[in-house]
Length: 129
Length: 248
Image (cartoon, rainbow over all chains, first blue to last red; front, side, top):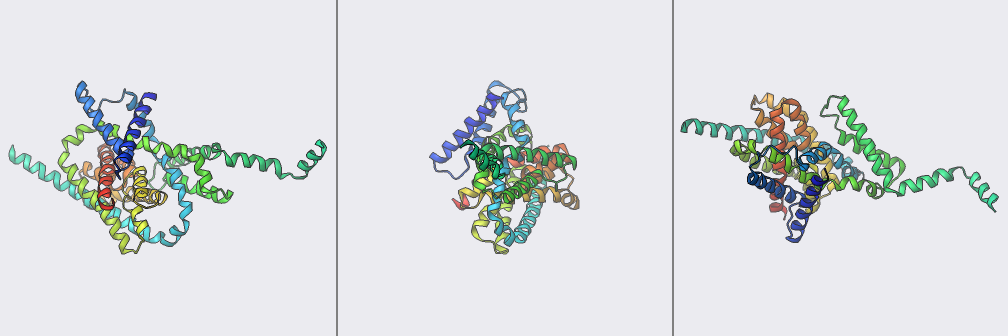
């Protein structure tokens, strides 16, 4: 557990250092996530471990524990909305309408793109075969 | 002299209670513990409802604590002194998303082209439609910046919003509301469209409505859940890059 947590903090730290020293606007944790994924894939390849096989590592134990109550971690920042109550009262209905429209459009566009590309790949594969 | 102090203390029955409140209100212990207790209670309620998308424990916890702060007239800064220990874990938790992503690397590789196409289309439509509809409804610029990353997991969306001049708390609330809207609408919408490809349905749910949509996808179908989780991780990365280009 401790080792897994330390690995997460090391990559978080490295991500923040990288983002701030290079003046990147990509959040430090996102850089940390991408570099951890790249490192894990490289290590898996080097030791010949299947990529799904992480359950018994420290990281494989700590990640589900942290991600299992991910929602809790949003609460402190979310409570900050008390500082913006007038905005929510004024713009609440408009914000809600925007969210509904945009979310539905995104769902539809994504699923159509996926299904379309999937069909195209399969057709080309069956043509080649 | 001691009798006098005793007398004045006895004459003011509020004093012992008040000094206890002064201690608690100033120490991080109270609000840290309260946040955890409220979360565990909200999560148990959500569990009891069979994880109905509308019984979202994040939204319920935020509303309860916000009410409590208003009732006790506690400033947000005081609350955050305690709650910051929880808030801090958001960074390492975002890094931890790499683990399920790597665990599903074989699935990603096998479906690379449809995933890449859907990721790029979905990410651009999510940002574009949020800003577009926002302009249509006359929302001001700082609100639009908080609105743009609404489909991304809250930790990343908050970081993006604050980097580009939006408010992270507003971003968090918009992200959570988006998650709930996605989780409620995805199943009827996909059934209406006649989509039976559960990989595609899950990918759309995770891309448009992050962790809340992913939880919903897992409840519907395990394959959908796996694709939803992958879409959530990938969209967190791509949205960060796209917003850096648009606003940077």
